[in-house]
Length: 255
Ligand SMILES: Nc1ncnc2c1ncn2[C@@H]1O[C@H](COP(=O)(O)OP(=O)(O)OP(=O)(O)O)[C@@H](O)[C@H]1O
Image 1 (spheres, rainbow, N blue to C red):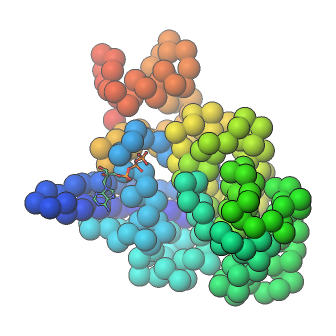
Image 2 (image 1 turned 90 degrees about the vertical axis):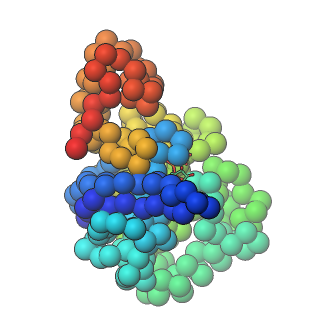
């Protein structure tokens, strides 16, 4: 479903070149739920932007649902949903329901399929009480549920999430995690999740990829991740160790 083959993306900054992502190769199969971790500046958002076609790779190859994202952005938009937790795709001054209707028109979703999908999302994300509220008046947790629904109205096969639980309280986080688990289990939606919240990873992801300085530093199951640092008490300890390269053998490097 997602394929990167030696993908790289660099930026020219004045006289320097920043290699945000280098030589990155991985595959995510249909139905997987994968956590994509890395310290600040590691290259996670750059990867996600290449997956959505916002950025073109400067080397290598990227495919999502068999499509080259930067060349087939419109075709890909029908197959992928994206949520950037720090931004909203909703119309700030419009009621949530009107934003959804605009998205229906943009994606050319047939009215009855849209109605059924919206009813389902309204029930599972509990959107009913604030469907008529302008987006700017929503709390962060309500807005995030609205953004998730907006990303899923066209029933994409792949969902890419960039910090979807940032700033949420424990109850809101639990609700969103529960929703994502069900979406993956019941609909088989493939999910790639970037987060700094390791609770998200523990609760949701069987497979974890870790990127550092633009390169893949770990790719394996959560159990294998924990086993890279035997005796470490928590996932925070293990990930801190990998981020800082601490320990006698250093981080588990896969390549
Ligand atoms: N448009 C750009 N121009 C120049 N440099 C960029 C650009 N976008 C990203 N970078 C650089 O590429 C590197 C990777 O950035 P990226 O945003 O992908 O990291 P990240 O893993 O998402 O970080 P964070 O967890 O802080 O969001 C950083 O050094 C960043 O400064």
